[in-house]
Length: 448
Image 1 (spheres, rainbow, N blue to C red):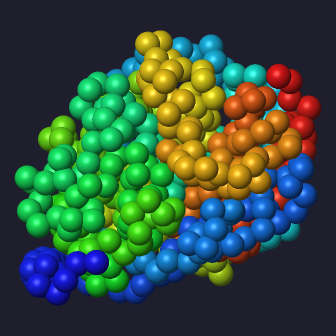
Image 2: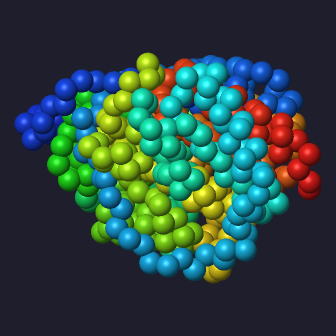
Image 3: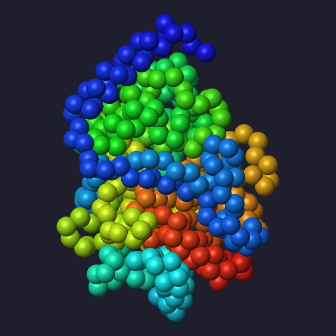
């Protein structure tokens, strides 16, 4: 434990940075509840995806926990055009068959049962995108339908994309799994708390870096209402987080958006390239993810994409703070999300995005995890499921106004992805019901 004399300068530096931030920001209208639900379905573990909900801090089993966020924060509405992908298209071929209609009917039933405006899903079987379906409307009480290529907000499923970009930097020799925060950005940020200085890239990827879900309360409150360039918001937020003593024991699993925000800041600092540009160059372009972007898709004043809705069903275009873009602010359509997931099932582009050992490392659990334990790898949770033939790659994503889930089986080379344009419990129920039905229909008998 650090003594008071050691802590005073840190607290003082942090206070000064928070004052600077608060002076610079424009305070947003209202805070919102940011639910990062890390589990889905409560039913039969042998077939269905989910497990009973528990708080993230109490057990690495599956978890629904609520964080408070706001989001009068800046969003990036447009994504610069990307160069043509060199990704091999054979493994991502979509069969335009009756499968699409079957997927859409399953989604329609789940959406109607839970009063959700719009949903979309993709099914992966045997290294191919078997089908993509959609149902409903972009905005409640408006006629514009959800289209096949509409992008959905992925929320905290962003972490798998950030982890993948980190893997690319490892392959390029710019990072090592055991590189520490102090070694990487110690000169950039003076006064990093000793607890954090020795935290490694691997510990950040596995949520074992000593961070709370969003960092110190006063720092998070300032970030929720920040305006200005996204990179500047991230720097101020990360500096303030790292100046204070660790809020959890380093090495203990505590799910943390703050930790992934630090990962994103490290990447853009050592490359001298904004996170958004890094993601486009290192992940989006090589995989051909042309619909991918940051923040809410579309615009608040034009219905060009699925519009976000709060849990009561009312439209609301707010989003998470730009400070945690690396933790939860990427959007893309279901086809592109499926392409990304195919890569994590081992169907890489030519040339490969990641070295085989790097991809394997991102899927490794940290520490000893019981067979019936949940476990967290690099951007993925890894619960065991009988339908999957072993450990899955799983994650839930939400920013309170959208909700999605990914379930992949590396053993059977299959998966389902489901998203909707509403947040809250009804959205979770709708996504879970659709995922259950799609798994029962397409995954249970998947070969391999």
